[in-house]
Amino acid sequence: MAKVKRPKPVKLILGMISAEESLFTQVEERITQRWGKIDFRSPILPFQDTDYYEKEMGANLKRKFLSFESLIDPGQIIQVKLFTNRLEQEFLYPHLSHRRLNLDPGYISLSKLVLATAKDFEHRIYLGRGIYAEITLKYKRGRGFQPGEVTFPDYRRTEYLDIFNHLRQIYHQQLGKEEKNEDLH
Image (tube, rainbow, N blue to C red; front, side, top):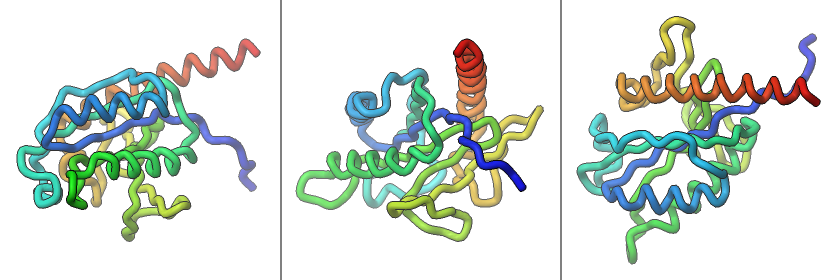
C-alpha cells in the first residue's frame, strides 16, 4: 500500500490573453498582491491559433505568460482559479458581459504542466468548488514538454514549449534550494 504524503510544491504560472496589452500590467499589479513576486515574464506573443475568443474579446489578441517566485501547494490551484475568475469579471467591457481578457492559471511540476478551468470535459478532473484541472503537457526526459492529444493548439507552439521548459528549469533549481533549506532544519 502506498503511503500518503504531501506533494512537492509546484510553480504557479499564469497565461493571459487580451487585445489590450495595457491590461497585462494591470493584472500583474493585482495578482502580485495576492500571489507574490513575479520571477518570469514572457514577451508578448501573438494569439493566432484559434478564433475562439475573438467574438468576445475582439481581434488581434495577444498572449503573455507569467510565473511566480513562491512555490505553492498544488491544491491551491482552486483558489488561484477562483481569484483569476473574479479578476476577469472586474475587467469586463463596461455595460457588456464580455471579457476583455482571459486568465489561465496553472502550474508546472517536474513531470507536467497543469491548467485549471471552470469547464468540464472528458479529460478533466474535478478538484472542487467548480474547478477542474487538466494535464496540458507532459515532460519527457531528453525531449522536454510534449503536447498530448487534447493540448490546446497554442500550447503546442515551439515558442511556448521553450518558455515552459525554461520555467521548469527555474522550478527545478528552486526545488533544490528548498530541499537544501529543509536539510538545515
